[in-house]
Length: 308
Image: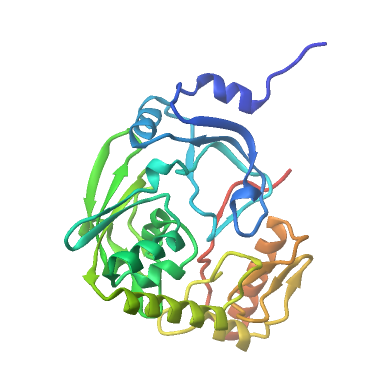
């Protein structure tokens, strides 16, 4: 019987040898907070920055790559992602280096994992990061923030590897950070970030973190399959207020529903597909446009292809 190689097998044959590991047809639903989405054709877990740089420098130029962080602000479509999906999950991308007034954090470290270090070392000004879902690297591309503070307020620089495999340090001015956005080239992969901080009593740091967490727990859904705020706030307005005003609070699409705790959050109740979630979001955009003449913009990043 004639056996034909799968697209993933063919792709693996032309990819460079690496120190890290490859996985073919890896389900991306395992790596996203919505717990939906198709597979990565090939998933690459680099061992360190040099391994990542070598891969990018020597891979075939026409093989697309996509970087996934914690998957906390991501909707992967049901057909998955073609090419190579990169995840910086090795301990080498989770290191922390503290200097006199700066702290450098690996891009793969989860924001919440920073909490212990901030408290133990008395590092103030970065407490807001601990309550933002995701990994440190992802917080820059979206200029993540909450409760009056954003990444752009505390970042000094970022180390990156570009699509040619070149390793560089980029200053905050060159990142062009703005509300939930940055002028960040698609082929740049952040490997670490340096933040400025203010010395602060450990007890005060812990109190600030606890206060932010309490506020978030009271106003936003948790322990459910969601991906944070679905839509960006239009300038001078609140997305949730527009959604509520437009009668979208109780909308649902199969297993995808609008959160009853915060209507700018969509939730997978357990049976939704990525298509269901995206359809629900598009229906909200449509109704808000009809009611208010304002077009909401997705904050959740949608990637991949629809299932055939």
